[in-house]
Length: 281
Image (cartoon, rainbow, N blue to C red; front, side, top):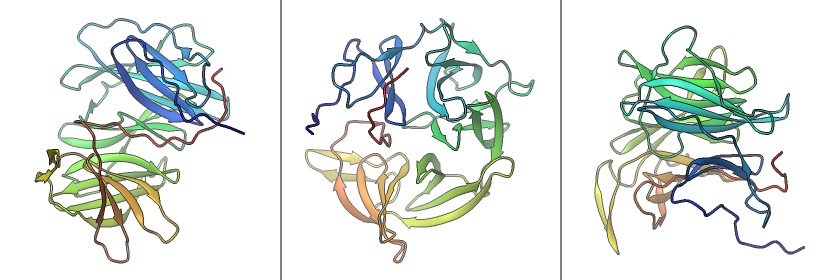
């Protein structure tokens, strides 16, 4: 069997943004359309979702999830003002909905604000799309139950005050809290209704937050999150440090080591993608 190395991504339009990946499918924002495609299937056209309804004074962000009970893929559209105050949420089911459906208010109350962050806007884990929100000076873990299309909040660990980032590793939700040269990495093993967090790692970074590192051909501004991407067989954790540096972290020593500087431009969006030959509906 010969598999081509090229990755198929629609190229029409000036705007291409990765929304997320699930079961080998990748969801993209291409120009004014939301599309779902399988990158390793060459020449197969993407599935195009219905046209997005126009909203005044809204900044839309998207999430992509799957519910195995009904075998459905859904895209979440979170509409917010430019101050990140969420004003509405819409959902579209691939292959079933002809239009986007409004979710309405959150338990009869206004939606909490969305915390501004770099990288992917939503993460999908345990049947829910998760993101960070805040209201009245308190931060929450907000989640959207993909199957039941319900919204809810869970509390964050105490003492969270740095740059916070959500990620998924081995089907578990991770939260990294960057505080200067230390990163507290929490994991959630028990979900609804408890939302119990466990401190997994305390990582000492190779550089403190906010430092400029001279690395040809240009200096690196080390601002941003820390994202675990892989746990090796010996327990070593591979992480993306501040969107610029690939590091390894052996929990036995507690000291992270630089593997490689990533030649990226400004804010880079990274997703975990496991390829498959599955086709969109």
